[in-house]
Length: 337
Ligand code: KG4
Ligand code: ZN
View (cartoon, rainbow, N blue to C red):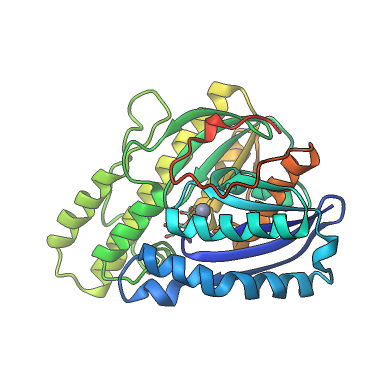
């Protein structure tokens, strides 16, 4: 079965066609980065309008690239939350309307389930059960995963998500939006060991995170320098080390506590190369396997939504055609398909 996937939860319009036996057929992404760059962050109303403009042309393009037509699509999957309500409603309206027009089923997909399952699109997919670290702009979560839809939340950020901390710290360092990749680039030029940042909440038991204190730490550290480019690079270096090391410590702890030997890492921050390297080293030490999505499927995309939706459609899931989205939606409320 061909599944059309639609992602519009934030500032990327993502579309893909995934075939249940033959795999990913085509995918395309339109990033709104230029639209929001002048404002230093995502402007929700502009995001919704851009999805309205780009979604239908992108669907046409992806159907063409997949060498298929509307009458060979067997189901539609769309991101129904969590995310920006206006942006989500664009995807929901288009998905449900097409499902009605084409007389095929459609399913609401949880954005973080999309991220979590993204590594299963790769040629050597992880087997269940595994521990998942989800690190995006809005979420930092450790999840015990028994199968599709069987998610137990082990820990999460009590304040800022890891990606959010990257973005806010990047802003303090005078870098543009989105801050994560820019900060990572600057950190490469920083000197190791000049500044030592704390590893928040690692000195006590538990699997929760807190990243908001690092912002204050960055601000005071920066204020005590001349603010030159090298100073900023050194601060970026210390910040990135702190976030990465904190995530590594908690992942090691989660694997040991669960007695599991597979780790899956997904979400925008999983594109961070230092984090990928350090987690791979840790997994090696623990005799565990670690799985990441390919770089382009770390951040938001339509492929992960088509894949997650396909797992539910294959099990005959049928939903009413009502156009619904949930800006907040806890992952552990999901049920197996
Ligand atoms: O998953 P995603 O595309 O959107 C959400 O669901 O939030 O994640 C976006 C987040 C942003 O905060 C961005 O700064 C961060 O992922 N990010 C990175 C890197 N690439 C993206 N953070 C650190 N290093 C990167 N290379
Ligand atoms: Zn995301």
